Image (cartoon, rainbow, N blue to C red; front, top):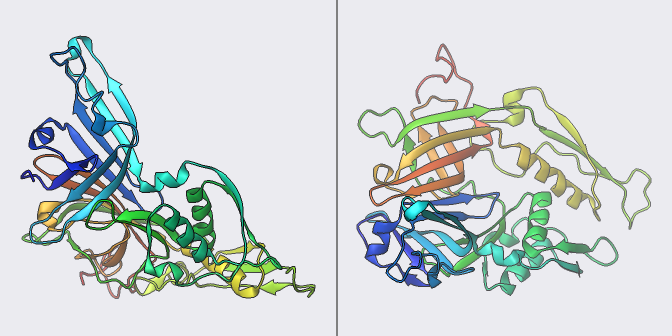
Length: 377
């Protein structure tokens, strides 16, 4: 492996050392709401045979497998991308000087987007559907997929009707039940796991981001924002097919079903609840409550933090879906955050990460005159 902090796997084989010296730039995007993606830029020149370099490289053909593995000394490897080549953008200039090829692709979930289907799912739960679909593509279903599962969708009530590709269908199910849908690799390319699960906010922090320590800082700058223009209470009502009660059932809730990452969640912090109404085709009150909780789970991420870190200084590779801790920025905003997205910008000399963190709570109300952020913890 070259001295850089990453390894490229092209068509299942490790790229040769001189390939890295030709890479102009490499970026990898991880995101909890979007498919993972990569962008590789290579210089283009004319070969001895009159061809253009890399254009007909079989390792960069349509649907060629491509993976990126990041390494930090003393820690396990991290497969930050595992997917396929889906697009070329070729820029040519006279004499091929400054010509370039941009290679782009998405993670293995793209395989689930190749065919739109019409299918009725009967006598299955949402996680049954997700695990069955993941299995069709050789993805290992995550163990947590079956937690907080839906009731079985029976023929006497509402069955599940799929109209679209498998990944589109799963994202629709995930949206209405508050679950994240992703296909990720762990430490090795080709070992893919399908997630249909809520985020694990109880996980220990994978890294600590330090801003204000003059000796041990790990991030250059942070931008933190919050907004409370989002619902914190849901009133849900729905008539049932299997119950002729005129008023139907209720699924009112002020809980997202996720533990807050600090003392004050959205409702407590805003101190002025925003209420929305929800109706949804369900078969019982429990399912209606799940839909209401999913709405609040989505709206509950009212704190967002943007920043950038260097892998060498942080000594860790940030991954979307992991939990990190921010320290030294006051009692309101210090604490645990969920990593929502990471853009890895990799060169031969550095591996930088532009990240977005989300939080469903803030710290305790500051006591005394601590400024806008409160006193340092």
